[in-house]
Length: 242
Ligand SMILES: [Zn+2]
Image (cartoon, rainbow, N blue to C red; front, side):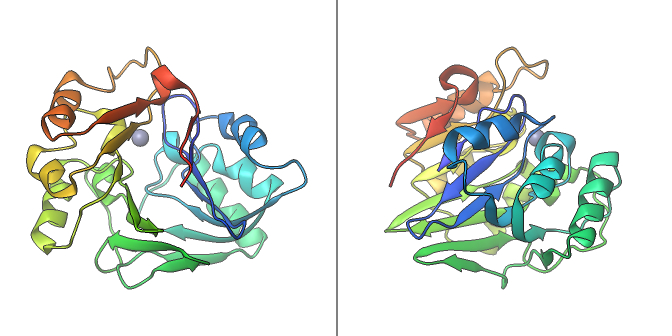
């Protein structure tokens, strides 16, 4: 897994042992292109699945060029009601290139060889739904591989964490991609006590104007027993090998 160094935003590439590639979010601007060049062989221009956790600019801006330059087999989106130039353009290119669209729901899971993507939020489709806080529409995926579990949370905040807690689903994971760049309104004590991650990853940019990651979230991660926190703002490109 590569937590790409794309500035203030999220973008993660997963390479499977069978050489499938899954890209979760694409970060702001087009920084993702340089980062993909670092971690994908130059002759490989295919991506099996692109996931948009939610269509905010810091998660999707880079994806328009990714769709244009790579052969993307399928996209997974929530289909929430949201308009922005880059999201409109993304949907336009998906339609033009006739890319397969999956609408996220709990029963829609994906496997790539022995790597399994378990969609755990939304429970039922939220297609066409308007959210007051789009962050709380973030698709949440648990990745399972070789006995390891990685929880990808987009920009989920307390409200969505509480929904997940109420479902009674097993949220435990070895690695947590911390919600909303380490914002103070994500990663509640209750949520972290259920996830119990050993490793936490924070995608944020050095000196970002939001003050991400927040002291509050960092303290809660430490209090929950997280042994290692990796951050793009300090560590640059983060690579985890299983
Ligand atoms: Zn974000």
